[in-house]
Length: 294
Image: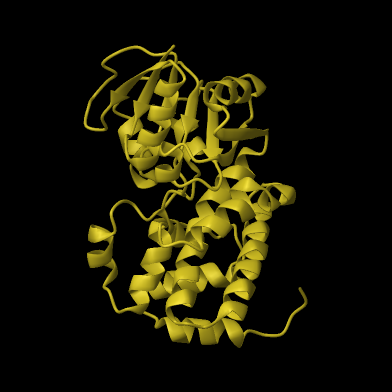
């Protein structure tokens, strides 16, 4: 089978190598092209989230199943990646892949677990069969909203976790922060149409645990470096890839569908990144919020 790959960054490249290892061919298409150079039977999309819409608009509808690897939300529209794909290619069958996966470990063949979500059962089965093997165990879900939001929001909270670690607030604070991040992620997800149980799974707590606890995570490193006094624009130029939590924080902050009281941690991350609020002041604001029940 011939599979198209649009966006060959670290994660896209890792999935491309896995597909080749399954005996299929991979045709890489670059974002600067104006149309497909070869035909294919399915498309893997690994573009930076803020470039998805503009890149896809340069290509004709491939009329094949599409799997998104990107984790984030578009600033301005507040759309998830699958929504942008369907806006551009209304007749497409789209799936998303999410879960606790660092690209370099997948390339090394270390065991990993993730989830494929799609509204279309045939699309779920197709990509499940394409990618599942003894080193990448996949589960399936019909909750596209929840799976995508889990993958997007955990990047915002990984920035918060990097701040917590770099401020040396202790293990109690780190565990408490991640617990409240999960609660906030679930509230936001439910307000946007996701199912609560999804956030207790691989794309929710699973991806949060990984991304918010390792300096392999670009978003975690953003939080650390901000505490060290790095300027955000300078930091993003040398982080070694796209830190999707930075733009997703802006999208979540400005999304009026989500009440402010449902996203206090995301609001403080936004204020640190975009308003210059000191991380220590952000922690103080969170700790001094009005008393409430869990």
